[in-house]
Image 1 (tube, rainbow, N blue to C red):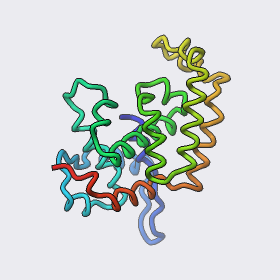
Image 2: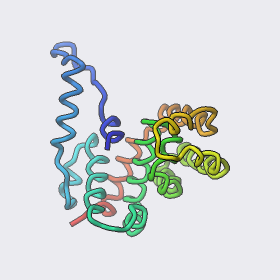
Image 3: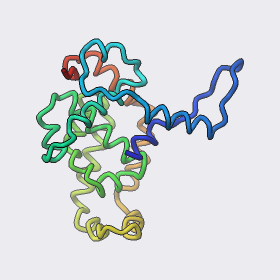
Image 4: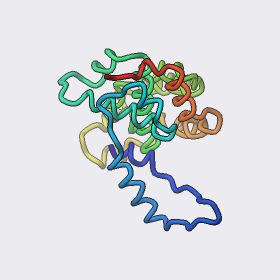
Length: 203
């Protein structure tokens, strides 16, 4: 949840003739807007079509998340029963949230690693080919070093922090951040959703 919130918070420059909100007020407003956002248990076509681009991915992610509540299956098992588009949006969101918050090391350290293979296909589906190739590289790197990485998985913050030292996944983080300059994930996801709206309708 925290990584999802952090993903949304960025101060925007206002027009010169408008008052600029102090950073702390802007952050508070963003936080309140996030907490008070509408969450749609049902997503008919008319709602999806009415959502602005800035809210579209979040609304899809929320809709999938709320449908998972109360289900004893793993998130991956539930997601496998959903559409290709829903799988792509959810799995790539998980990757973005984790990597932007704590790198690939955090992604594979947490339960989010269950989406590692699905995310490769997800990036391909939205045509983020550089991210897809990087995800494949990250998956291979994790598998190759899994035994070494699992030595730090004892549930303590100290071990988690230590796991970053000489971690073979670290160099991949910079590539991930750099690829935002050449592949606009948000725009690619919005385009896919708009072009395949039927995959996201939930009534």
